[in-house]
Image (cartoon, rainbow, N blue to C red):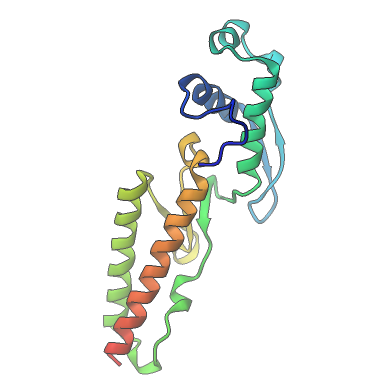
Length: 176
């Protein structure tokens, strides 16, 4: 995970709590592609003084947390209230002769996708959702943990998708 400033550290319980609470109160404005167009953060002075004192949070430290959120937000894509990891048409990446398109190929493809979903969830601890037509929008819930680990989740999803394509293409060639 990329930390913007060393003084804001997600491994520190109080920093994690601060970041999560800011995130919950932040309003993200998305464009039609689901990319962040603008962000409205709560003001430092809007927080309870006792809470900020408990965290040992100065205005500078608060700004570091906001900078951390802005950095990640610049890379995320939303789809229907979820964090979108992929909008690939995986099926279109299958390279097979026309005569191989059969129930067997579809069954094998679906089996490989199901195995990849199970592997993703086991490796990341995040539930995976296929949304939209044919489930092509691969998403996770919009939570603080998933937001902080967005780049990692995208990498794992991409790696597993490539594995599925490779395995299905191999199966298709062997069964042509």
